[in-house]
Length: 626
Image (cartoon, rainbow, N blue to C red):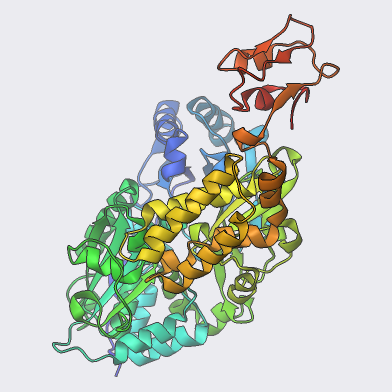
């Protein structure tokens, strides 16, 4: 039976709010763009203004002259960092505007004109509740459920999380639901694992719940070992909303009967680890984690395990081996972790994004979550949209939105209005899709049918200057380097495939290379021990499926249409288009370009190293390639 306990006072929302709230993006991207300097500029500028005093958001002595400056997590619109939200309260109503690419100098002007003067600096606004901007579409097509707190709260202050309803899901589970009822609710929601495989989360929990343990010990693990090139969904959640991860883990621990949990995070995420440690200490101090949570008889302890950055440790059995102190290498399954996992005890493993959804589902109900989504893929999915797009960043979309909508509506289309070439989905385990597939919906089954996968959420956009053969080589090189070497198909097979792709890109391809790549791919997929090897050939197979003519051009015509393969590309200058500005000559690292100012220039093909610097630098489309 569910316990009935009194709601702790720490779950009551804050009572006092400042007149002006300033939120500065202090995620990794925001800090890299100058977030710390902008944060300091707002603090010092307000303190020196003589009008507003800088206070902590929850100080009880806050009058009309109070202003708070808070560091937040990633807002998602990464291309516009440093992002700053300014929320003012007038006559009881709040109005928020977001400024983009803010510098310390801009911060001082925002204080003077907006915060003190009352008039926003319109030319710097990227988002507004009252006026349209060129960036409104970035959020217009999103449904921010997973990212509901990122960019909104201070991740280093537990009271900010509690003020947004934090730990209410855990309280509800402990006070009004049995463990089985929690599992049934998660099953009814239809949520599937967001780490890549898409396995039903509730079913996974039920297996672990029903599995016997010799001493009653079970474990609940959060997989935060995000390693896909171009992916930063989990990092942003860990940095921007760590308590949501802990709350999801605690609810899961209660559901499966686990008293101990681990969160596995790669050491290359120092900011995420720092904030997790702060959040863990705060949650334990409030008795929201640890012994007898919120006065109940349920105890759940979490430990943070820093991984060494091996991509293979994202695989469940390798991850558990790493926690146990062994080298991270996959093990043969069965038994599955739910039967015999960490230290041979029943273990459940979910990724970060999955767990952040759990408190929301418990609080708002399975049916509400299930209304979002598409057919068998319920809820939303966060994608890291990177590459040749106008608005790169994190986008959370309802399952069922098309790839075209994400790329052209949310991300704003291709940078510099160049031609779209391909989208790589699912990272090294996924595949490249052409323009003809852009109306495919974001759905586990639909994307699997194309040969790509939803994966953890990496989405890399390429334009006409990207070579598909070279792209396939890039991802295969990554998986080949990250292979643990335990099984021969992955260790040796990916190396042979990489040698073939190197040969093709160097202009030495052979007619038999294409069928040989296909044969090796199938053998590696069938013979590899874990998903790293089983999916490693996917980028090559989808490239051959949709862009076979580019492989054939490399092999038979010794041509790279994108000009990305140096051995297959020759640069020359169109004399009629050349203005003699000498920009190309200044950019050339080997002085292969000659000519007088205001006269047509010439490239010496014997000296040229085909780096493409002149092509990128020319503003008059005079530098050509063939």
